[in-house]
Amino acid sequence: MEALNVPMADTPVVTFWEGEIVDTKNYTFYTGKWEASPEDDKRHWTKFPSFSPLLSQVEVDGGKSLDLSNYPYIFMRWKEQYFVNVGTDCGLTIAGFYYVCFSCSDGSISGFYYDPNSSPFQKLELKSTNEGRSGYSFSSYELQ
Image (cartoon, rainbow, N blue to C red; front, side):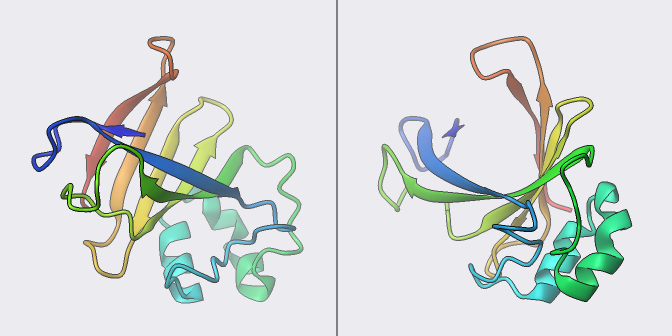
């Protein structure tokens, strides 16, 4: 990802990301790392209306018994791993991660940032476009 207009950086800041798709086999709705407790997980996942029908089963077994193969949303976690072109003194943090939901019907992506040392529920929204090389435009980023 490339962050533009970062006040403490002379150039755009590029970060390398890795992700996990919640498939209930390899990854469940419970993160189990990055300082996120099951309570933190539930607080963040329930911000997505599309998660509501899944909540009761997630509370029982972490969602392990759910079949998400035909669910119209894909849930993920995205974690920035390192800065590609700048040092850690660039004014940004990569300590946290995002809870992410992809809509299969319209291609939109929404996410909520988690870092126990940052403002809670920073929201990320991406909308699909037919412009540019990525196919997505950065719609908004806000604190809630």
